Length: 357
Length: 138
Image (cartoon, rainbow over all chains, first blue to last red):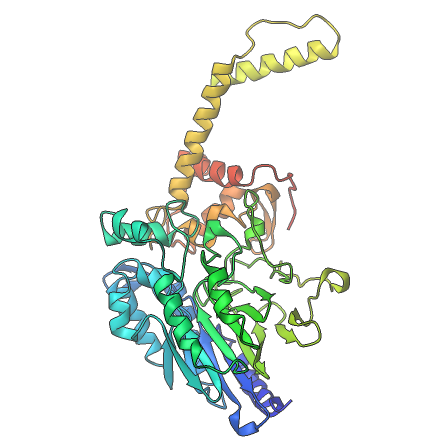
C-alpha cells in the first residue's frame, strides 16, 4: 500500500519515542491511491483531569495527558490535526477544563474536540464550548468527510428536572456504575442535523464519525451504550465506507455492523474492566472483540496505550502500543468484511493471549 | 455475633445428627426471622461498602475505588489470598485494598479489621457472588 513510507517513518519515530516511553494517543493515517493525499492525525482521549483543591490536581491523570501531548508533538511526519475524544475533565469544572486546556494548548497543530459526559453535565457544556467550540460539527479533509457527534446527551427529564443542582447532576452521571445515571443518546435534533449534513455527501466518500460513547449497544449499566444507536447507524449505513471511532470505554473494542466499522481508542487516565468481568451483568460485547488482559495497577500507565491508525481505502486499522503488553493491531479485513485482530484472532485460530502478571 | 455462632454451631450438630440417621434434634433451630435479620445486617454492611467504594473521602485526592473498578469489577476477590508478584508475597484482599488506598487514592490505609475495611470487602465480594473460589489464581 501507499502508506508504507508513512508507516515506516512513523515506526522510526516510534522507536525514538520508545526511548523516552510510549504514549497514550491515537495517530490516524488515511492512505489513498495518490501519495500526496495521504495524511495522519493523532487521537488522544479520556484524560479525566481531576481537581483536588487550589492548584492541586490528581497527578496520575495529569501525567497521562502530559505524556500524550508531549509525544504527539514528537511524531514525524507531523499529523494534520489532533482529535481529543472527550472526558477532558472529571467533574466538568472550570478549574479542570482550564487545566486540561492548558495541557492541550501545548499541542503543535490544529486541535478538534469531542464532548464527553464528564465535560458536559455540570453546566451542560457551556464552559467547554467557550474553550473548544461547537458540540457537534463536521469537516472535510483530503477527500474524507468527518463528523463529530455529541453522543452523551440524555432525556430532558433527567437533564433538566431530576437534580436540584448542576453539581449533583454531574456527580450522578460521573459514577460509571451509578444506577441514578441515564442512558446516553444523540437525540432527535442532532440526528436531523446529521441527516442534513450527510445529504450532500457522495455515498462512496469515506466517512469517519467521532463520538464519545459507542454508537452501538454493549453494556447499558456502564453506558457502553447509545440509546438511539440504531437510528444513527441507519443514517450512516447508505455510505460504503463508514468508520466510527469512540472513547469512553477505556479499552480495546471493535465491531462491524453492516457497512460500519467500530473501533475504540484508549484513555490516557486509567483502563476499565470489560463488562464481562462484572459477574452480575447482562452485556453484549461484540464477539469480534478479543479483550485486553486486565491492567497491572502497579504501573500507572498500563493499558492506557496509543494507536497508529491507517485508513486504507477509507477503512481504519488501529495499531495499539500497549506499553508492557505486546502491541496489537486491529485492522479491517476486506475479505472478511470486518475488523480483525492480527495476532489475537477468532477462537478457532486463537493464539495464546499475552500475559501481564 | 454470639447468637450467630451458637446458631451455626447448632446447625452443624443438627447436620451431624441427620447424617447419623438419628432423629433430628429440634432445639433452638433458627427461624425465617433470624435469616432475614442476618441477611439485613449483611446487606447493610454491603451498602456501607458501596458508599465507601464511591466516596471521595476514603482517600485524600478525591479519586474513588469505583473510578477504576465499576461494580468492583476486576477486584477479583475470589482469587485472594494470592501471591501478588508486585508485593512479593501472598496477601489478602484487605492488603490489596490498602495498596489502592495508599497509591491511586493517596490516602491513609485502614486497619484490616476496621468496620470500613469489612464493608469494602463485603461489597467487592458481594458483587462477585456466584463466581467460584479460586484462591491463588492470577
